[in-house]
Length: 265
Image 1: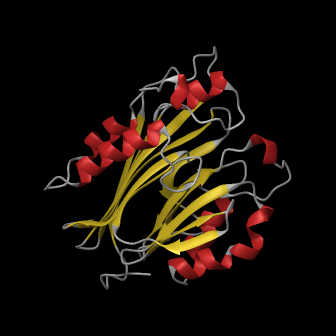
Image 2: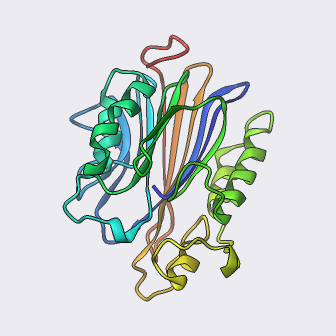
Protein backbone atom coordinates (compact mmCIF):
# COMPACT_ATOMS: atom_id res chain seq x y z
CA UNK A 1 0.00 0.00 0.00
CA UNK A 2 1.37 3.38 -0.94
CA UNK A 3 -1.34 5.86 -0.09
CA UNK A 4 -4.42 5.62 2.11
CA UNK A 5 -7.02 7.91 3.62
CA UNK A 6 -8.99 7.04 6.72
CA UNK A 7 -12.13 8.66 8.04
CA UNK A 8 -12.55 7.33 11.57
CA UNK A 9 -15.65 8.25 13.54
CA UNK A 10 -16.42 11.29 11.39
CA UNK A 11 -19.61 10.28 9.54
CA UNK A 12 -22.99 9.79 11.24
CA UNK A 13 -23.67 6.59 9.29
CA UNK A 14 -20.20 5.04 9.08
CA UNK A 15 -17.63 4.30 11.76
CA UNK A 16 -14.87 3.65 9.21
CA UNK A 17 -14.35 4.91 5.66
CA UNK A 18 -11.05 3.98 4.03
CA UNK A 19 -9.77 4.62 0.51
CA UNK A 20 -6.36 3.42 -0.64
CA UNK A 21 -4.06 2.70 -3.58
CA UNK A 22 -1.58 -0.14 -3.69
CA UNK A 23 1.51 0.57 -5.82
CA UNK A 24 3.75 -2.35 -6.72
CA UNK A 25 5.82 -3.88 -9.50
CA UNK A 26 3.46 -5.48 -12.01
CA UNK A 27 5.38 -8.74 -12.06
CA UNK A 28 4.81 -9.43 -8.34
CA UNK A 29 2.18 -12.20 -8.15
CA UNK A 30 -1.00 -11.10 -6.44
CA UNK A 31 -4.47 -12.48 -5.81
CA UNK A 32 -7.44 -10.14 -5.68
CA UNK A 33 -9.53 -9.59 -2.54
CA UNK A 34 -11.12 -12.80 -1.25
CA UNK A 35 -11.89 -14.70 1.93
CA UNK A 36 -8.78 -16.73 2.68
CA UNK A 37 -9.15 -20.53 2.62
CA UNK A 38 -6.98 -21.14 5.70
CA UNK A 39 -8.34 -18.12 7.59
CA UNK A 40 -11.93 -17.67 6.35
CA UNK A 41 -12.50 -14.75 8.73
CA UNK A 42 -10.01 -12.63 6.73
CA UNK A 43 -11.10 -10.70 3.64
CA UNK A 44 -8.05 -9.31 1.86
CA UNK A 45 -5.92 -9.41 -1.24
CA UNK A 46 -2.89 -11.67 -1.12
CA UNK A 47 0.76 -11.10 -1.95
CA UNK A 48 1.55 -14.51 -3.42
CA UNK A 49 5.29 -13.92 -3.16
CA UNK A 50 5.50 -13.47 0.62
CA UNK A 51 2.02 -14.55 1.72
CA UNK A 52 0.89 -11.38 3.49
CA UNK A 53 -1.40 -8.53 2.56
CA UNK A 54 -1.45 -4.72 2.42
CA UNK A 55 -5.07 -4.19 3.48
CA UNK A 56 -7.60 -6.46 5.11
CA UNK A 57 -10.70 -6.75 7.27
CA UNK A 58 -12.29 -9.53 9.31
CA UNK A 59 -15.80 -10.81 9.93
CA UNK A 60 -15.47 -9.68 13.56
CA UNK A 61 -14.75 -6.07 12.60
CA UNK A 62 -10.99 -5.64 12.59
CA UNK A 63 -9.16 -3.75 9.84
CA UNK A 64 -5.51 -3.10 9.07
CA UNK A 65 -3.45 -1.40 6.37
CA UNK A 66 0.27 -0.89 5.85
CA UNK A 67 2.44 1.41 3.75
CA UNK A 68 6.17 1.24 3.12
CA UNK A 69 8.43 4.00 4.44
CA UNK A 70 10.45 5.10 1.41
CA UNK A 71 14.15 5.02 2.29
CA UNK A 72 16.11 2.96 -0.26
CA UNK A 73 19.38 3.45 1.63
CA UNK A 74 17.94 1.54 4.60
CA UNK A 75 16.44 -1.33 2.61
CA UNK A 76 17.49 -4.86 3.65
CA UNK A 77 16.80 -7.71 1.24
CA UNK A 78 16.61 -10.26 4.07
CA UNK A 79 14.09 -8.34 6.20
CA UNK A 80 10.84 -9.99 7.27
CA UNK A 81 7.70 -9.47 5.18
CA UNK A 82 5.78 -6.39 6.28
CA UNK A 83 2.54 -7.88 4.98
CA UNK A 84 2.70 -10.42 7.80
CA UNK A 85 2.14 -7.59 10.29
CA UNK A 86 -1.30 -6.94 8.83
CA UNK A 87 -2.21 -10.63 9.02
CA UNK A 88 -1.01 -10.95 12.61
CA UNK A 89 -3.27 -8.13 13.74
CA UNK A 90 -6.27 -9.45 11.82
CA UNK A 91 -5.85 -12.87 13.42
CA UNK A 92 -5.28 -11.44 16.90
CA UNK A 93 -7.67 -10.59 19.70
CA UNK A 94 -5.96 -7.68 21.47
CA UNK A 95 -6.94 -4.06 21.05
CA UNK A 96 -5.43 -1.95 18.25
CA UNK A 97 -3.19 -0.01 20.65
CA UNK A 98 -2.05 -3.17 22.41
CA UNK A 99 -0.95 -4.50 19.04
CA UNK A 100 0.96 -1.39 17.99
CA UNK A 101 2.66 -1.26 21.39
CA UNK A 102 3.78 -4.88 20.94
CA UNK A 103 5.65 -3.94 17.74
CA UNK A 104 8.18 -1.66 19.40
CA UNK A 105 10.82 -4.34 20.22
CA UNK A 106 10.60 -5.95 16.77
CA UNK A 107 10.14 -3.06 14.33
CA UNK A 108 13.72 -3.10 13.06
CA UNK A 109 13.31 -6.68 11.84
CA UNK A 110 11.33 -5.21 8.93
CA UNK A 111 12.06 -2.61 6.30
CA UNK A 112 10.47 0.74 7.13
CA UNK A 113 6.70 0.77 7.45
CA UNK A 114 3.64 2.59 8.74
CA UNK A 115 0.72 0.58 10.09
CA UNK A 116 -2.86 1.55 10.88
CA UNK A 117 -5.01 -1.01 12.69
CA UNK A 118 -8.45 -0.71 14.15
CA UNK A 119 -11.99 -1.75 14.93
CA UNK A 120 -15.20 0.24 14.72
CA UNK A 121 -14.47 1.81 18.07
CA UNK A 122 -10.68 2.18 18.24
CA UNK A 123 -7.82 2.81 15.85
CA UNK A 124 -4.06 3.01 16.34
CA UNK A 125 -0.98 3.94 14.34
CA UNK A 126 2.61 2.69 14.41
CA UNK A 127 5.67 4.10 12.62
CA UNK A 128 8.72 1.86 12.51
CA UNK A 129 11.11 4.75 11.78
CA UNK A 130 10.31 6.57 15.01
CA UNK A 131 8.80 3.81 17.15
CA UNK A 132 5.69 5.96 17.58
CA UNK A 133 2.62 4.04 18.74
CA UNK A 134 -0.55 5.99 19.42
CA UNK A 135 -4.29 5.80 19.49
CA UNK A 136 -6.05 7.78 16.79
CA UNK A 137 -8.78 10.19 17.83
CA UNK A 138 -11.84 10.46 15.57
CA UNK A 139 -10.80 12.36 12.47
CA UNK A 140 -9.49 12.18 8.92
CA UNK A 141 -5.96 10.87 8.32
CA UNK A 142 -3.69 10.51 5.32
CA UNK A 143 -0.72 8.19 4.96
CA UNK A 144 1.77 7.64 2.16
CA UNK A 145 5.43 6.56 2.24
CA UNK A 146 6.47 8.80 5.11
CA UNK A 147 4.96 9.48 8.54
CA UNK A 148 1.24 9.97 9.19
CA UNK A 149 -0.09 13.16 7.59
CA UNK A 150 3.30 14.22 6.20
CA UNK A 151 2.29 17.03 3.79
CA UNK A 152 3.60 15.60 0.53
CA UNK A 153 1.70 17.18 -2.41
CA UNK A 154 -0.21 13.96 -3.23
CA UNK A 155 -1.28 13.56 0.38
CA UNK A 156 -2.42 17.16 0.74
CA UNK A 157 -4.40 16.89 -2.49
CA UNK A 158 -5.90 13.51 -1.68
CA UNK A 159 -6.72 14.28 1.94
CA UNK A 160 -8.51 17.46 0.93
CA UNK A 161 -10.64 15.61 -1.63
CA UNK A 162 -11.28 12.71 0.73
CA UNK A 163 -12.29 15.04 3.57
CA UNK A 164 -14.89 16.66 1.32
CA UNK A 165 -16.29 13.25 0.34
CA UNK A 166 -16.64 11.95 3.90
CA UNK A 167 -18.21 15.27 4.81
CA UNK A 168 -21.14 14.67 2.47
CA UNK A 169 -24.51 13.41 3.73
CA UNK A 170 -25.30 10.76 2.66
CA UNK A 171 -21.88 9.26 1.99
CA UNK A 172 -21.13 9.32 -1.76
CA UNK A 173 -21.06 6.15 -3.81
CA UNK A 174 -17.74 4.30 -4.02
CA UNK A 175 -17.19 5.49 -7.58
CA UNK A 176 -16.57 9.03 -6.29
CA UNK A 177 -13.79 7.70 -4.06
CA UNK A 178 -12.32 5.70 -6.95
CA UNK A 179 -12.28 8.83 -9.08
CA UNK A 180 -10.39 10.65 -6.33
CA UNK A 181 -7.86 7.82 -6.07
CA UNK A 182 -7.31 7.85 -9.83
CA UNK A 183 -5.92 11.39 -9.90
CA UNK A 184 -2.74 11.62 -11.98
CA UNK A 185 -2.00 15.19 -10.93
CA UNK A 186 1.70 15.68 -10.28
CA UNK A 187 3.53 18.47 -8.47
CA UNK A 188 6.20 21.08 -9.24
CA UNK A 189 9.74 19.81 -8.74
CA UNK A 190 10.32 22.27 -5.90
CA UNK A 191 7.46 20.69 -3.91
CA UNK A 192 8.52 17.07 -4.36
CA UNK A 193 10.09 15.21 -1.44
CA UNK A 194 13.66 13.96 -1.66
CA UNK A 195 13.53 10.34 -0.55
CA UNK A 196 16.70 9.14 -2.23
CA UNK A 197 15.21 7.74 -5.44
CA UNK A 198 16.17 10.61 -7.78
CA UNK A 199 14.14 13.40 -9.35
CA UNK A 200 12.73 11.39 -12.26
CA UNK A 201 11.38 8.73 -9.91
CA UNK A 202 10.01 11.36 -7.53
CA UNK A 203 8.09 12.84 -10.46
CA UNK A 204 6.66 9.44 -11.39
CA UNK A 205 5.64 8.72 -7.79
CA UNK A 206 4.09 12.16 -7.21
CA UNK A 207 0.48 11.45 -8.29
CA UNK A 208 -2.04 9.51 -6.25
CA UNK A 209 -2.43 7.13 -9.20
CA UNK A 210 0.95 6.08 -10.60
CA UNK A 211 1.33 5.27 -14.29
CA UNK A 212 4.68 4.02 -15.52
CA UNK A 213 5.67 5.53 -18.88
CA UNK A 214 8.26 2.84 -19.53
CA UNK A 215 7.56 0.14 -22.12
CA UNK A 216 6.60 -2.32 -20.87
CA UNK A 217 5.39 -0.74 -17.61
CA UNK A 218 7.34 -1.99 -14.60
CA UNK A 219 5.74 -0.29 -11.59
CA UNK A 220 2.51 1.51 -10.83
CA UNK A 221 -0.83 1.49 -9.08
CA UNK A 222 -1.99 -2.13 -9.04
CA UNK A 223 -5.29 -1.64 -7.23
CA UNK A 224 -7.59 0.88 -5.56
CA UNK A 225 -9.77 -0.06 -2.59
CA UNK A 226 -12.73 1.51 -0.82
CA UNK A 227 -13.80 0.01 2.52
CA UNK A 228 -16.69 1.07 4.75
CA UNK A 229 -17.96 -0.10 8.15
CA UNK A 230 -21.51 1.15 8.73
CA UNK A 231 -23.00 1.83 12.13
CA UNK A 232 -25.50 -0.92 11.32
CA UNK A 233 -22.68 -3.48 11.32
CA UNK A 234 -22.36 -3.85 7.55
CA UNK A 235 -18.93 -4.02 5.89
CA UNK A 236 -18.38 -3.28 2.21
CA UNK A 237 -15.03 -3.86 0.49
CA UNK A 238 -14.52 -2.85 -3.14
CA UNK A 239 -11.27 -3.38 -5.01
CA UNK A 240 -10.53 -2.18 -8.53
CA UNK A 241 -7.43 -3.76 -10.04
CA UNK A 242 -5.27 -2.50 -12.88
CA UNK A 243 -3.16 -4.51 -15.31
CA UNK A 244 -1.46 -2.69 -18.21
CA UNK A 245 -3.28 -3.38 -21.45
CA UNK A 246 -6.42 -4.76 -19.77
CA UNK A 247 -9.69 -3.26 -18.59
CA UNK A 248 -9.83 -2.61 -14.83
CA UNK A 249 -11.33 -5.45 -12.81
CA UNK A 250 -13.72 -4.89 -9.89
CA UNK A 251 -14.36 -7.14 -6.90
CA UNK A 252 -17.09 -6.14 -4.47
CA UNK A 253 -17.73 -8.01 -1.22
CA UNK A 254 -20.19 -7.18 1.53
CA UNK A 255 -21.06 -8.88 4.80
CA UNK A 256 -22.54 -8.25 8.22
CA UNK A 257 -20.23 -8.39 11.21
CA UNK A 258 -20.26 -11.73 12.99
CA UNK A 259 -20.33 -10.14 16.47
CA UNK A 260 -22.08 -6.84 16.08
CA UNK A 261 -21.74 -5.23 19.51
CA UNK A 262 -21.22 -1.80 17.98
CA UNK A 263 -17.50 -1.77 18.78
CA UNK A 264 -16.33 -5.20 17.63
CA UNK A 265 -12.74 -6.15 18.37
